[in-house]
Amino acid sequence: MVESTGWDRRLSVVAGGKRLIGHAGAVLLRRCADRTGLTGALAKVLPSSAAAGWRDRAGVLVRLAVAIVLGASNLSEAEQLQLHHRPLFGPGASDSTARRTLAALDEASLPKIAKVRARVRRHVWGLLHLRPGCFPWLTVAGKRLRGWIVIDLDATVITSASKKAGAAVTFKKTFGFHPLAAWCANTTESLAMLLRPGNAGACTACAPPCSGRRDVRR
Image 1 (cartoon, rainbow, N blue to C red):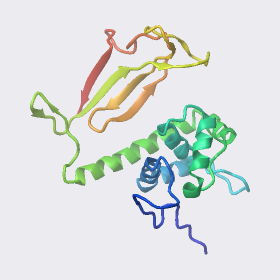
Image 2 (cartoon, rainbow, N blue to C red):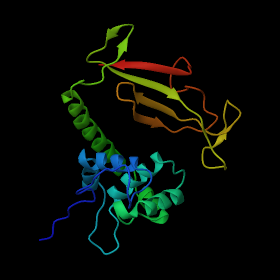
Image 3 (tube, rainbow, N blue to C red):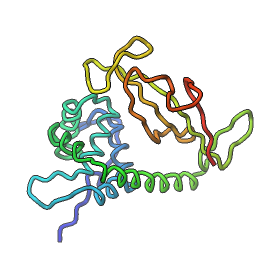
């Protein structure tokens, strides 16, 4: 029986020397996804195959997310970043493989992915409670909001260089998209994103219209 040791076995951090790579932060992101169980959980809900040449879709999604964090704005740039990290992470997915993986995320698989993310988030938040500083509760007007989760709702303009689906002139006279995002103020993580065309209002999903809104949930 052959047991995989994993890409991060005996991984070390040094300040100088040879065989170093750029974008070292990618190591922490990838390792965080693996160690918190996100990569493995995604692998259980996404299609898999033992056929030769089959690429693990969970790995493709995680590495694509890492590439986006590093600044990749399209699948070709994501492929080049993965080639750069090949000595550490192993062969990456081509832009065509990544495109097929994204295209396969249908209405049946998206709710499964959402459940996986929620389960992993619950696990990570449980770990935060165990650290010396405990969970990052917010302080508002000098009062510690222990037990309260604060959600920031706000729209943001994302420019586009071409006429992609949904791209339009924004209220700032730029061209692109105007998604509405929900962020957890406690942990600064993105919880949900409502994709909208560039000409959507500042906060048309809220009533009355606003440029930003903060909700508190307990």
